Length: 269
Image 1 (cartoon, rainbow, N blue to C red):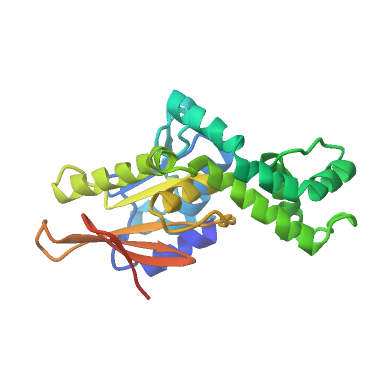
Image 2: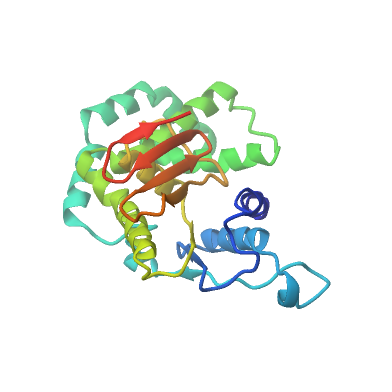
């Protein structure tokens, strides 16, 4: 994340102020420790101290505040606040014929994983947690168990992606999970255009499922996307000098689109 901060700092050198200022930069995070740590590492890479901000020659670093809400109050990044209608719909998805058919199809894999891990793995949802553990091992070039092969890992990744997707399976679920963050972004941009908000850069550190919610809320990806470490989205706000003429560019490592406010989403190369 530190390196990503450096890369994006260079990419937006003509836009991001030379020196960090709390008036121009806002950093927000999920309350989960690893997200806060990612936000701190990213901020250290993007905002190295310059001039009078340099307080020691031993390390090129300055403290950057990271803001977050308690998990049960966060309706933007974590979205764990209870919603009875959503919860009922989620249960319907868990018991849907499509998901049950998927679990029957991969039952031999689930049984194989249960046998060798000592875990009771009966659902697609349970595969995701195990996949993360094994993916971390492979990511750090550690030897995977002999009972696991590349084909199984590919199947597990697919099932893990499917797990993330079924939290936003229906249109209503997409609006609840992805729409909350998108609404927040659009409101923030409106405030900037109206002169009500000073921050030029708003940064958010969240989860892989947060990215999936947003991308699926925009109907940009299907149910096969499993974001990796350091995955990100960038929303760029443009105007041509007239407040009424504004548009948004959304950048994702695997997806490039141009969004015109108030119109349909258009892909571009």
